[in-house]
Image 1 (cartoon, rainbow, N blue to C red):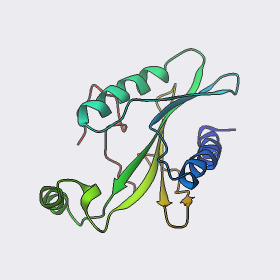
Image 2: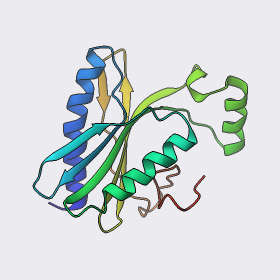
Image 3: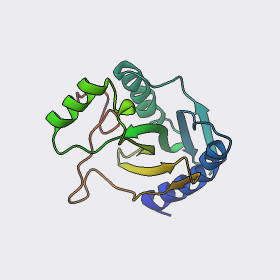
Image 4: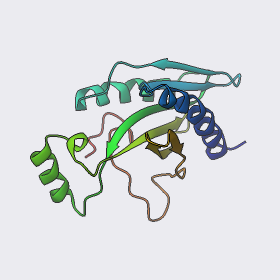
Length: 164
């Protein structure tokens, strides 16, 4: 199975678990997991990821985990708020006005997956969370190299690079 297919399977398996949390009225905890060479998945809950410094710390650990000898794929799973805005300036205005995307009435909730393998390949998945229907809808697996794909955030590149 290739990298993308393995990531698809990891997303499917994680969604099953995350939906159990959803049905229990809980959020899925921020998680760092590794698919080991043996085929076993090791997962651990991380401290809350609320600030840019938290994201940067988790990104360092994420990148280090992917380089361990027995790790085939490292991945981070986080719940997040999303909101579409035409421009970065519009988003900045919304955040300034509401204090957070989470306070905006049109926000959405997603479960995000960031994958990294030893070769440095990265894939991402954003899944929509519907708390009323108690479902999580799987999004497409995308790469920063896919044509027409723009991905920004802390988990896109090496943590020593500044990404905004």
